Length: 469
Ligand code: 1QQ
Image (cartoon, rainbow, N blue to C red; front, side, top):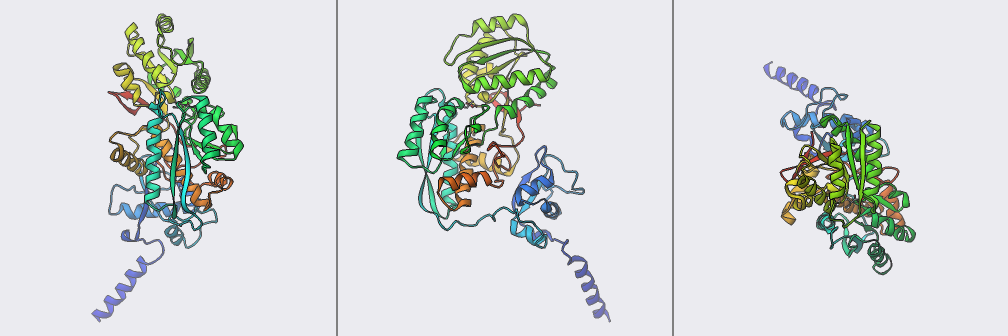
């Protein structure tokens, strides 16, 4: 009798555990973890990872199963309420299909680990960046990010029997040199795609060479308006200033109580001019008065005339669209003139190099800039990138390295998805690329071949970039 009872109890217990919903924690294998960003709702994340919002239940179920024994994972009680900072469990697409009983739609991303069959040998990729001269302060970390990605792509067998080889050319941050490098890469080296160039100014000169030859080009530091409008072979992983600055102005207005500012910009560079246009519009939109607009040119070293005028007007802040070298000199001279430290500098992408502090020293502390990425990002992909970069180079990566690393992975993903090195097929594969994991968050190109993810505002504190609050 006793035995019969226990068998009945066991069957009853199994019945309560058995139905599809019951997922024992040990059955759940997270292929990756994702930390929720500000506007990454569960349905969006499901769409990104599985190409299907239906898979949203899978993420909730897998995350809850993990959180039962590991409290670093979130507990999701209501799928309509998820919080930034929550760690979610992303299972493999195959497991997701199985958990949903094969209900996912057709838009599913190709399963990770599908090895291309047509590729073999060495695939040449062009790297066109400023590797010497003043702009190399951006170009070197960019090169590091690309070289790290290529090493990982090759060592992991991501492209099956094929490996990538970078053919580097030094643009020196110069238009003519950029055109020369692009011509060589396209015609002589016959690369499948080009990563670069460093400056928007160079991109406007050289990208048409790639566009006309039908060679995909991915910029990872070009932030001026109009870059991807040059043609359907032009992509970028760098958030344009237009996607970053309005948020920077809004946040700094609220935090610093800005009512009136002075503006300074370089009037002979595509990025600094475009950044100025975006700043001017954002200031107007926020109702912030512009007391004066001062200009300078690349290579200028004496900014005392502009800064003396600005000092007399007593602005709440100085909005500065500049590359790092000029920006650092302007900051030093402003403080030397006696413009107090609480009159902050607010800038764009040009500030986002650690060299700003190396060149500007104490005067660079407090500088605020709109950025695509901050090193404190808690996403697993970002933390892995930072650790791998530090292990490889012994220095911390900057935003430019995060973006160039993403560009190299995007090109490799397109090569793998297309299972071909045909340049037109690669262009199409970049266009159609599903979200990939990246230090910038889940990454894909939007309909204009630009990135689409939330910006951050960072501030230089004791020589390091921290998130501005
Ligand atoms: C551009 C930029 C520069 C700061 C790149 C180094 O954003 O030229 O578009």
